[in-house]
Length: 402
Image 1: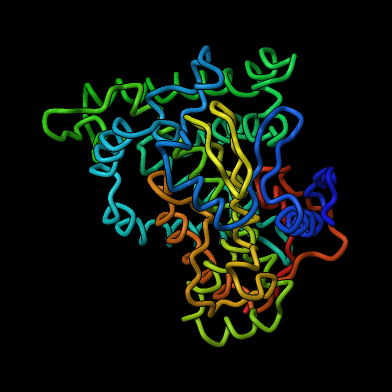
Image 2: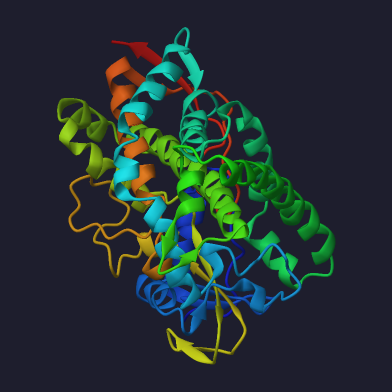
């Protein structure tokens, strides 16, 4: 008989092992669970897919629960619904195309080489020295903002990413919501927006050959992006863009360390690189949950969810659901098909997914080229992001050059 009260979620301090075991229990015994705040958590793949596939019932507009929030704006691509979402995404996609991403390959290769050239000796921090600066520099150059400002970007993102999922829920419903929300979300967003607005103003005066300029001039049927929409997309790209790639690289090294036979096969056959990255994204998705709000009463997994309730769909749990994925805890770079949900699903599928894959492929191949052996430094302290994110904040490596 299933227990009535689920166990509390564990921390990610062990790299996610306890969390994955807990998620299996939740899938088996509490696939749709209402917590103490009235938030519903969804764990099975089929239910997660249902939640992320139907924006008419599961809205991305979280301001429905916090209408006084200026940070959750109708201008933000990731938290708006159709039909505005369709128009805004079309305009952004006109400027941020697959060709734009593909054309970055030579520069990403050059930057990756430059960063690894700075690595001296046999030990370095993969995240601090390589996996974090690479995507931040790429995105800064893509937008046309100074790459040397990357510590500003990191400060803003670290403050916002310091929240756990439970923190975000408490901000919606807890007694201290106002003060915490101001400190962790609104203040860094305000600073980032002011920074990007200055660059948008400059592009309106003198357009250049960068993404901000293309966003300024993008037009469909006489419609153009507002300054706020451009600023919001730039902020989203700076935040989510570097998180996805830096965690993907760290998680790849962790997965290869745990699966030495795959690491050896990868060195012998580079055609496995893409499959390795997809399997890493399945097993360790950088963003672990997708938040939605119900627009009406709806039944999910046999559980009735009332209107105007937050729903947290676990992408991490869905990617490990044995009902959908055969042998989900086996790392298999030849897994086919591998419809992992690391970049979301439906209309909010991550626009930055192709860029993260490009950066991940180039970075992984260059690490393999430069170093004949790559190992996590024994007994060295390294730490993981908290719940809501799946990845290392630091990852000390010991390497042997080829």
